[in-house]
Image (tube, rainbow, N blue to C red; front, side):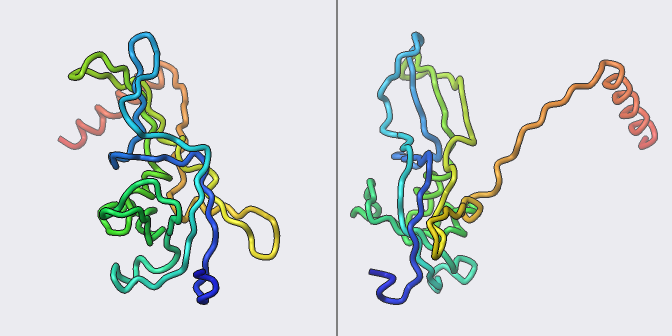
Length: 189
C-alpha cells in the first residue's frame, strides 16, 4: 500500500529475533537446579521475524530520525492499547533511543536484547549462569533492487558486535609491566 502511495518501502527479515514481552531488553530463560526449563516468562527468540521499512521525514521526532522507519503489520504486543508497531526510526534503534514513541524499545529488543539464562532457586533467589550479548539480531536483511540477492542491513540497526580477543603473556612480562607502572607512579609524585 505504501509503495502505491509513492513511499519507498521494503521488507526486512531479522534472524534470531527477540520477542521481549516485558521490555527489559533481555530474553530471560529460567531453569531449575536439575536443568529443566521453567516457564516463568513469555519472552522468546524466534528463528526469524519480518517487518517493513518505509522512508519518512520525521517532523515529530526531529530530522536526526529521518530515513527508514520500522512498521510491523503483524505485531504480537499491544502498544498504547492496540496491536500496532511503529513507525520506529532505525536511527533511534541503532542509537539506543528506546524512550521514543512508536515502539523503538520493542524493536531495539528484537535486534539487540541479551539472552540470559537463570537458575531459579525460589521466588526470592535466582542466579545468572549464562549471558549472550551477540545471539539476537543476526543477518538483518532485505532484497536487493532488481535481483534476488540479499542485502545485509544489520549496520542500520546496530553497531558491529565487539569481538573478544584473548592473549597470553608470560609471568615475566606481567611482572615487568607492574614495574613500569611503579616507575610512572614514582615519576608522577
